[in-house]
Image 1: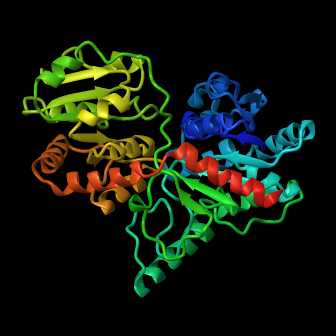
Image 2: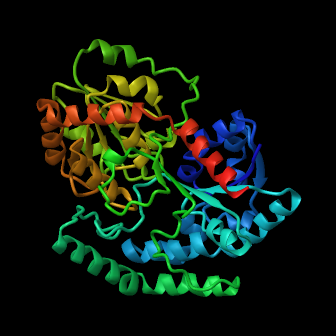
Amino acid sequence: MADIIVGTFPATGHVVSLQPIVRELVRRRHSVRWYTSERYAGQVAATGAVFEPMSPHLDRLAGDLDERYPERAALKGLKRMKWDLKHLFMDPVAEQVEELRLLRARRPTDVLLCDPGFGAARQLGELVGLPWISVGSTPLTLPSRDTAPFGSALPPSSSVPGRLRNAALGFVFNRVVMRDVVAYRDALRVQTALPPAREDVMGAGISPHLHLQSGVAELEYPRSDLPPYVHFIGSLDDDVTDPRPMPAWWEEVRAANRPIVHVTQGTVANTELDDLLLPTLRSLAGQDVVVVATLGDDTARRVLPSGLPDNAYVAPYLPYSRFLPHVDVMVTNGGFGGVNEALRHGVPLVVAAGSEEKPEVAARVAYSGAGIDLRTGKPDPAAIRRAVHTVLAGSAHRERAAELAKQYAAVQAGPRAADLIEQVVLTHC
């Protein structure tokens, strides 16, 4: 059996995305040690892996970020993203590498499994020759001659003019826009006796040994130069049965026999409900639909207006495996996990994305034909209403979502990922 170390950037989405894979590795009796923040000790233990705590000061996301980093709070947009890359993702890497070295010293390790945000994996691999495997929980960030730089949300193009555009934008992005981030990263690498990296910033977290990409190829842009080490493994939702019951009003919703519209802002970007959730409730009030909103946690309920439309229901959370089969359209801010789950159940989408990787998610949904991209994170209620009725009235988006659901059904992330990981272990033994 293999000895595997899992390393994850200490953020919920990064940890959750590896759970079904780790659970399957443990089921196959591999020895799995999971290195991450103490905040996720419970989630790690639930998979059967051995929890290995990261030093608390390396968890840069603990607590209120605005209070902890007032200089960050004053930044917006690109400036904030660059600050995050430097100080949340890159600064802890050297110490994380040293802590991983100590873990390896206790027991020989065959492979390191990580999310692309965990920069210590590449550095440790380069320093000691340890194979490492990445698991992508966002759209594929790997650069391609057929795609514009990740973050531009531009459609792909493999034509001669399109490839010239892609190359030019890639040069500007890496050599101009992200020049200071690249220089910062390379200066940190020199401190750990490593040369400057050849990879661009967005693709550096993709392993050249094996990259396990969530989603299906039909949702990703076509790439004529897709490397053979990239494999699509479907949904990374952890299919362990959730014991929580559906809300008391659920049977009332089903009995209404009207189209069900689900709206969500995910579990992270759910503090400003005026961005999407409340406009959706307002836009569909009085319409011949039922609107079901999830808030992400109980605290968000406090900012909702006291009176909801008669056709609206809210809950902190709903078990998607029992809920989504009844949904006719999902309105979302573009969280990739939720989008994958919707499409796995054949649910077409209306996406209003405004930050992080979400505009790239929205662009891929539109390109696939399975939904509508509103091209903003703060859409007008009238635009939401039009998009929802377009999806409900037509068949094209529903049919395309159903086609993608068949692709998701053809692969199980845990078993498929474990098979591929075992191949890497055997190859490097």
